[in-house]
Image (cartoon, rainbow over all chains, first blue to last red; front, side, top):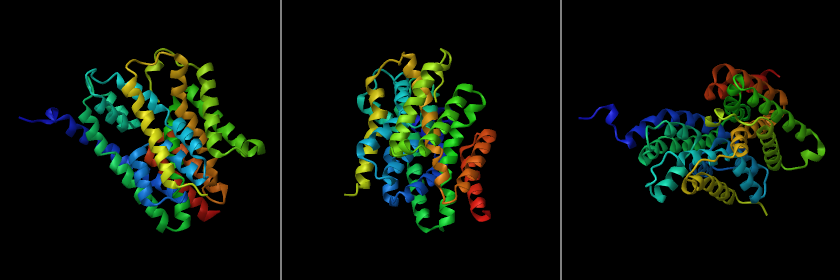
Length: 242
Length: 101
């Protein structure tokens, strides 16, 4: 006899991934608009999103492509923009059975996104790899398809609409960084200082001469290092993940 | 020579893959270092904030469009915590500003 609680981990993953995938589709559309501005084709957008599936990381990559950045600079940018996945991947290693094969570990690692990390950490006991694969299948293909359609829309919609839609990706970033400011004074400080210094570096001629990518890398490292030194996480808060 | 988009995609995908896969395959215990943990905690907020501002002011020739989008998204995010609504109202504000200004 089968009821909801006895769904196989794979089906459970498919089910839990679906609402996340619907959100991804909308977000990826905005990313596609940005990718369109960088001169990417819909197929390139699909490939980028399928293999990277990271909004901040992909946006950083799109900005690098638009600016004709060096490949090494691009690699560093992706490393910085996606650095949180190092932490999530580390945390997930604690959720896996010690017997789990290398192959499964690689696939689970590849599947990590902020949201899939969230639901896999909530999975009772050791994480079943097939739960992760199910969730991956209802999220990342929608993410990639949304990017494809966003770039296509960028090619056919009128200029004023495309420009307005390019505000979408920033709206999503703000939806990640603003709500925690309501409860965390430290995050509020980091966000406000980041806005201010980023603006300053764009208007001071010597700093503005540095490419956008390196400005992002330098500012991010300096600001988060200072925050880590002067506002280190308390023991309890260390369980909290960004 | 112009850089190839496909090579960019290869670089991006390779770095993303390595970042995700290395810890889960190699590290079997948690990071204890308080500085590293704090750094990794603050990093996403700093990156996203730096990438958003002042870049959002450049979405159109008139910086007021981006400023309107910024204000609308911040307010929406503050009150709804909703990713989609925050993006939607940001776009709507940019569109209205483009028409009215």
